[in-house]
Each structure stands twice: as structure tokens, then as C-alpha cells.
Amino acid sequence: MKLSFKVAAWNKLANLAEQTAKRTRVMNRLIPRLLLIPAVASLSVISIIPLLITLFYSFVRYNLLSHGDYEFNGLVNFQFFFTDSAFFSALKNTILLLLSVTTITVVLGVALGLLINDAFPGRTIVRLLLISPFLVMPAVNALLWKHMLLNPINGLFAQVSRLLGLTPIDWLSQYPLLSIIVMVSWQWLPFACLIFITALQSLDREQLEAALLDGANYFQQLRYLYLPHLGRSISVVIMIEMIFLLSIFAEIFTTTGGGPGFETTTITFMIYQQALLAYDVGAASAGALFAVLIANISAFFLMRVIGRNLAQ
Image 1 (spheres, rainbow, N blue to C red):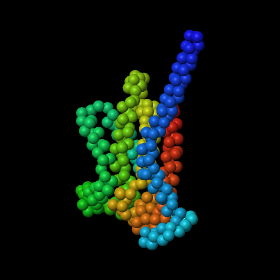
Image 2 (cartoon, rainbow, N blue to C red):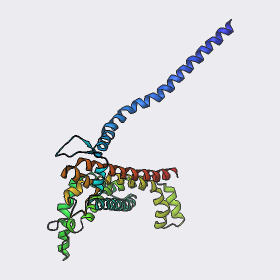
Image 3 (cartoon, rainbow, N blue to C red):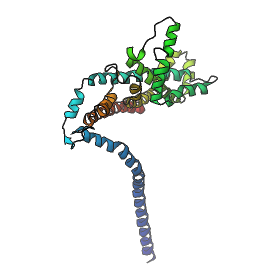
Image 4 (cartoon, rainbow, N blue to C red):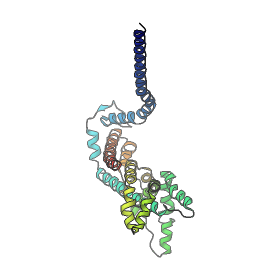
């Protein structure tokens, strides 16, 4: 009798423990999902809903001057955007801007990171000065370059040219895209430099000491120690810059206005022209979807590269 009572009690405790464990497992799965709801809702409001609205406008005829009845337009908006006389120039300028800025910022960022990696008097101040351009607003950055540096009459470069007996160059008229590339590179260089400086702090000093003892020169250290260690950081910098540089607008709008001709027109600036100058929201939405597609393709391949680096 006592034995059967003990067995029943143990079975009851076992069932209770099993039920408690099930509830715990359910709560462990449910609570994280509940905590994600505010983030998912915010993301939907900020990103997904505008994307769906853009998708809707890209297939309808909608002009800001004559609203109409949202008549279905099929692929006409895409055809209109892709056959625009500025499209191929804008695509070429966008690709050239992306490749140039990422190359300049990565190369100079690595160089500056290595230069100020070792301790020296005033290193903290130098790092602050290096990072400060990244905190400047894009429009302010453009105005600074336009009036203080590149102005052919009163700009710093013009004054230096006159001191050297040279004719000042009107950079924004003669080399407009190069001027934009320099402006954007100057602002994004601190970001790359900051990432590389942080990555260099985690480099194993014992490896460097062993390389020095083995007689490795600086270029050998750079090739076999520094650059492999910075591989992941370089991939991250390229991915982030590629995504954000697709939306470069303020520098172009403030300095060249997309000109002369189409020499500084990018996909983003072309979307602005279609939406707010030509008032064609449908064509602008089609262009925006094309820009989103480019950004996602770039991010996909760059994430693959980063994933391989992380797996090594």
C-alpha cells in the first residue's frame, strides 16, 4: 500500500516536472518573439510599408500636377526611366562614384590606421581630428568644399595656384565628378579609419614580435600579418559604404546640381529629378526600386564575402 502510494506520488511529481519543463520551453520560445514585436513593427513602419507604397506607385500613372485615379500603367514607368537620356550616364557615374570612394577610403584608411597605430605624443588628439570630418553634415561638407576650397576665385586651391604662378582651376566645372568623389571620400575616410584602428588594436603583438625576431621587414609584416588581420574589417567597410553611398545626394545637389550636363547625375539624383522636378512619381518609384535592387545585390555578394572571412 505504501509502495503504491509512493509510486503514485513520484509519478505525479514527474508529470508536474514535465509540465513545468514544457511551459518553460514554451515561454523561452515565446518571450523572445514577444520582445521582437516592437522592433518588427518599427521596421515595418519605417522600411517595409514605404517599400510597398513605392512598389504600388511604380505600376500606376501618378503625377503630382494631375493626381488622376491611379490608373494601372504596367511596366511603362520602368520603360520610361530606363530609356531616359540620363539613365546610362547616371548608372556609369553611380558605379564610378562607388568604386572610387570605396577604393580611396579603404587604401587611405588602412594607411592612416597603420600610421597612428603605435603610441606617440598627442595620438588621442590626432585620432579626434581624423574622426571629426565624419560628424560634419553632408550639405555643410559640400558647402565647405564648394566655397572655401574649390572656388576658382577665393578658394584655397585657387590661392595656392596663384602663389605658384599657375592658373586656378574651376574644379566643379572642369572636373565635376572628381570633385564630388573627393568631397565624399573626405567625409567617409574617418569612418574607414576608425574601423581599421579598432581592428588593429586586437592584433596579436606576439606575432609581430616573432616576425621581427625572424627578420621580417615592414612590407612582409604588412602582407602576411596586417592585411590578413584587416580582411574582415575591409569587407565590412566596403559593404556599409556601398549601401550608403548609393544614396549620395546632398553633395551633388549643393555643388553641381547633376551637371554640367549629366556628368554628376547619379541614380539617386535622377530619382529626385523625376519626382520633384518632373513631378512623375511613377517613374521615380520605378527608379527607386531599381536602386533598391542594386543595393540588395551588392549587399548579398558582400555578405557572402564577409561570411567566408568569418568562417576562416
